[in-house]
Image 1 (tube, rainbow, N blue to C red):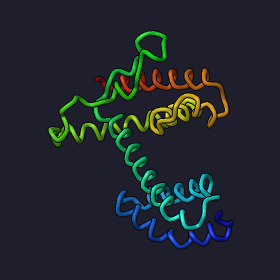
Image 2: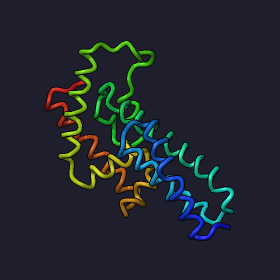
Image 3: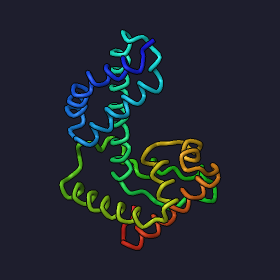
Image 4: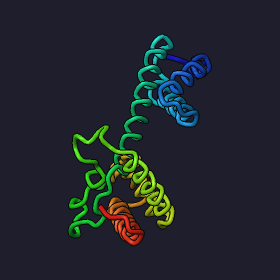
Length: 189
C-alpha cells in the first residue's frame, strides 16, 4: 500500500515525461497539461492504495486512456460540425432527435472534401460557436456537457445539481434555440 509520500514522489517523478508524451500525441500544450492532470487525479483517487510497484503500470494505462478519451472528444466535436443537420426535433420526444446523428457527415466522404467545403464548414463552426455563447447559461451548460463532453443525462444532472428532467428540458430548448438562430443566419442542412 503506497503512502501519501510515496504517491506524491511517484507523481513528481513522472510528471515531465507524462507531459512530453501527451504533448507529442495531442500537439496542444493546454490539452496535454489537462490530460496529465486528469491522469494523476485518477491514479490518486482510484489507485492510491495500491503498492508502489504497481503505480507505474497503472499510471501509464490511465495516461493512455485519458489521451484516447481526448481524441474521442475531438472526433465527436469535429463530427458535430462536419455536416449541418436539421436542428428541429421531430415531435416532442427527446428520443426523436439525436444531435450526433444530425451532424454526422455522409458515410464514405472522408478525404473527398474540397477546400471550399472545408472553409465553409469552418465558417459554420464559427457561427455555431457564437450562437452557443448566446444561449442562457444553464442551457449552454447542459448542451455542452451532453453533446461535447458526451456525458449521459444522469451524469449531467449530477454535475449541474438538477433533475434529469431539467437536463432534458435544457438540452431540448438549447437545440431548438440553436436551430432557429442558425436558420435565421441562413445556415440550412
